[in-house]
Every structure is written in structure tokens, then in C-alpha cells.
Image 1 (cartoon, one colour):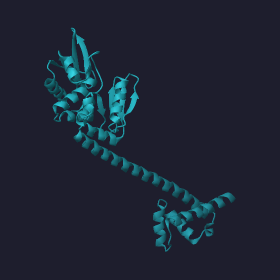
Image 2: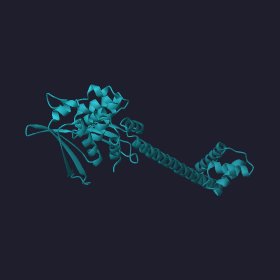
Image 3: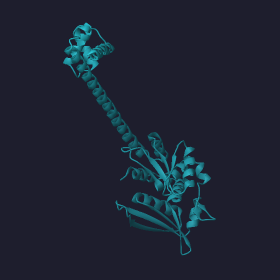
Image 4: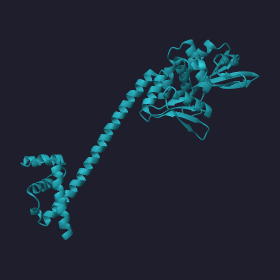
Length: 313
């Protein structure tokens, strides 16, 4: 089961009040429902790939709808061959949609959110939860952070964007070529907060645990990569220093270096892979009090002498 479906099934597992059930149905039907005219009758069709969500929808619909509900199951044509659960409301559909305040009686089509829901935070959250269950998706944090809702109308996407902006969520909007309008979040903290907003508390915990684990692994990898990069730089620098010291020795010019530089040069030949910190320790063993920056300055003197000899050679 995908993480997105886990979130949706967690949402519908909660206990809803009658008003919250209606708000949820309002959000779900507006963006999942399809109005059909057949035999001069208005029918409403809704569907889902989850048996649990289908059962919840059926429970809600039977509680608030007085007409006939037809249930059917089909097999999707996708590679996963998922079952699709269909509910078709037949008879008294218009009255049902008027009751939910989601139909324009002049055109018989789903319209924007009712003001009653906007004024109650628990109803608004149930409404947005219904929207997410209908057209939402969220990636498991093991891959990358992404939560989205897909709309078929630009006006609906803009309306949702504005609605969520008032709740502190900065959804971005993307227009796809196939006339799909995406509103999405990519910031992990906002995704987590949105999951809390739609009452998916267990999913938030799973999301946060996975996010922390992922971020920790990434941090370890970054540190490891830095260490590898630093080690490579140390080895490259040491290789160049060995070459310079060897060249100076071949030209019998070591006497031009100070006693400290001579000792350090011989230590570098002896320990070609050692860091400055390690060379500092070896120098102290030989009675020279020196710092890491002092080591660096001595190597600069060695390099300077190397270039002088190389130039005159």
C-alpha cells in the first residue's frame, strides 16, 4: 500500500460528527463526483480504489442520502490491475446536493465551498480532508518530499490555493499540458503540518520518523563525502610536498632550509600520508613546539625553495 493511501485510510478511520460527515462528503463529491443525466434523471457517481474508503463513503451516504445507492466493482486497466469501487446515487440526487450546499440549482453542477463550513475549523478540516481523499497524493519521505492535489479546473486550483493560504499553507500552482492543475507542497515541515490539519496524526508520526532517519543518513553521507574529499586533498598536497623535498635533496640544497624545516621535510618523506595534525605530533616528539599553522608555513618555505631551484635549473 502506498503512503498516500495509508494517509487516506487513516483519515476515514476517525469518528466524524454528522456535520463533519457532510463536510467530508462535500469536499469529496465536489472533486471526485460526476453528475450524469440518464433517462431524464440526475445521477451522481463517485469512486475509489480503497475498499475501506468505499465502505466509509457508503456509510456516510446512506446516513445523509434518502435515494438509491448502487454499488459496483471494476478492474482498472493500469499495470497494477487495481479494483475500483463505484457508488452511484440514483434518485433525489439534486436534493442531496442542495442539502450539502454544493450544487448550483440553475446549472446542476458542483460549486464553491459553503460559508457555513468556512466559519467552523473542524468542518473546514473535514472538507479539506474529503478533498485530499478525492484528489490528493503524498510521497513517502524515503524518496522526496511532495504533496499535491490535482484539479481539472484552474478556478478550483486557485480557490483551494487561496483557501489554504488563509490557513498558513503556501501551495504552489503548476499548470500541466493535459489540462491538469497541480497545487503542491515540497517543504517537509509544511507537508507534516498539512497532514496534521487533515487529522492524519499516525501518518505524521511515520512521516517525521522517516524524515529524521533520511536527514540523518544524508548528513552522515555529507560528512563522509567531506571526509573523503578532505583526505583526497591531503594526499594530493602530501604527494606534491614529497616531490618538492625529493627534488631539493637531489640538488643538495637542504642546508638552505631551517633546522625545523629539515626535520619536517624528513618526516614528510617518512610519513607521506600523514595530516598536518599528525606531523605536528611527530615534530613535538622530536622536541619542536609547533602548531598546525606553523607546519603550513614551513611547507611554504620548502615550496618557495623548490621553485627557486627549479627556476635556476
